[in-house]
Amino acid sequence: MNETRNYSKELGLAVLVMVILIAIPYLTSSQVLSDYIIRLAAFGIFATSLNILIGYGGMVSFGHAMFFGGGAYAFGLLMQKAGTSIPVAAVGAILFCVLLALVVGAICVRLKEIYFSFLTLAFAMLLYSIILSWMSLTGGDQGLMGGIPRPVFLGIDLSNGHHLYVFSCVLGVLSLLLMRLLMQSPFGYTLRMVRDNAERARFLGIDVWRTKLYAFILAGAFGGVAGVIMALFMSGAYPEFTYWTMSGEAIFMILLGGLHIFIGPVLGAALLLVFNDLVTRYTDLHGLALGIIVLIFALGFKRGVGDFALRLFPKHRKKQSIEKVTT
Image (cartoon, rainbow, N blue to C red; front, side, top):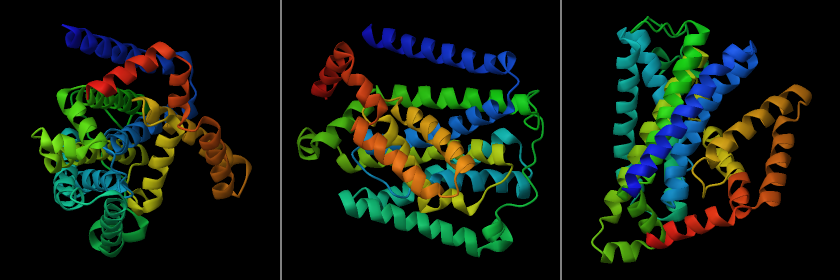
């Protein structure tokens, strides 16, 4: 009964957020705001999917961009080369990321801590090198040229800016809702147990390797969804999507927003996008200025804005502690 109430609450909140987002273009005609929300949908999913590994699984991946870029390229190539419909191309891109995560994860999740982190980075850089060198397919360092076709499906025309905005918002909210429900499911609590004490989990009969692999595959699949949204927004895919700095940005988003609260990575993505836009507008020293801002937030909030806010609400913090104990 409690689980049913919780699921209903999550669903109701998701519907409310979706309604608010869809209403925004009717309240303001700002194209900048619409573009910002589309990017936030992509990066919010991207950062939250990485937090499945970091926050819930205790696995710090430096190569999560391989799924972001892999999803974008798979989607773009299916649209350009195969001429598929958008839903088929999106599903194909997600399946590609699932298979990639299955192969990479089967190797990486056997390793611990820094070895896991650097091996995921190595696989991401391998994919980056393939994209750069396979020019006949990927366009090399120029990325996919010629734009991505956007044929109408189910009355939805993604070449229309408003349709693309609504599509991105709906896909973003649904993806976040699904990740939330998965992390609140028995699998999510099992993953927390493996994170906190793998030996104890193994003693209780849990297959630690398989649990970590499932988490890795889930994170890869949702990383691919983020790549699809970004490919549609950019009307292309570029090698930078798979570069190690993209993985670093996702980690920054988690650190800014907080890894112990589900919505934290989305808050971090919102902040980092704002900082990026402001810093780029007012100074050429982009890296230095952004690094200082991230450092200030990291030192000031310790565990991110979301985790800092948790400390201000004792009742909610107590609930979080009870959930952790039950795992």
